[in-house]
Amino acid sequence: MTAPSVDMHCHLDLYPDPQAQVAAIARRRVYVLSVTTTPRAWRGTVALAAGHSRIKTALGLHPQLAKERKVELGLFDKLLPDARYIGEVGLDGSAEFRSFWSDQVEVFDHILMSCAKAGGRILTLHSRAAATHVLDALERHQGYGVAVLHWFTGTQRELKRAVEMGCWFSVGGAMLRSRNGRTLAAEMPPERVLTETDGPFAIVSGNPLQPGECAGAIRELAQLWQLGEAETQNKIVGSLRELTTIGSNCLIT
Ligand code: MN
Image 1 (cartoon, rainbow, N blue to C red):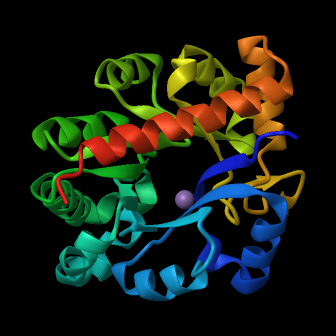
Image 2: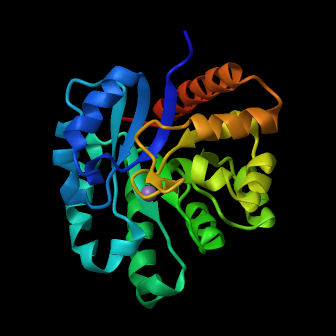
């Protein structure tokens, strides 16, 4: 039997019918990290996964919502003891969101500080057009836990720095369809690479990726690592185990 697929970054609550997606995940043997974009979405999204041990829910505050949702940082701190995974959090330096850059930095610094104070967490990070700033922030907050850079689009130099800092990566079918994405993935240490969909936002062949729909990513990684697809899938499940072990070691609670 092939190993379950690993979807390390998926917006389960933003699909048109999240309940149906949960049922499909249960049928398909998929490990899913269900990320949220605001602390207020946390309880409902956790409830969605009740009884499904392969779905973990991450507490997030998306950088693109930093200005309007920074008022929820108090709620974030209140929920943090119950959350083992954090995300989606990070910074977005693209033109559309730069107008409230200082809000983004305030929110991200607060979250990293809270994670460090709480003994560390596993974080799934957004770093579009802001990789250097995200890495700088991580350096400011030692003890935050383990960083998983999702859909990384930085430069080779930024990637090298992230690798040296011990960051992990999650890559998806959409990312690996671009030449630049494949070039970056080739430079990532294979033992620190996981798969993701970023569904329903990631579109492949005109359709949003479904939770756990990582076959395309597995195919590309198998080629890159010169392994069979089943072997690649196994390797990723092993890496996920390793990540959760490291993650639990950094937790005091
Ligand atoms: Mn996302």
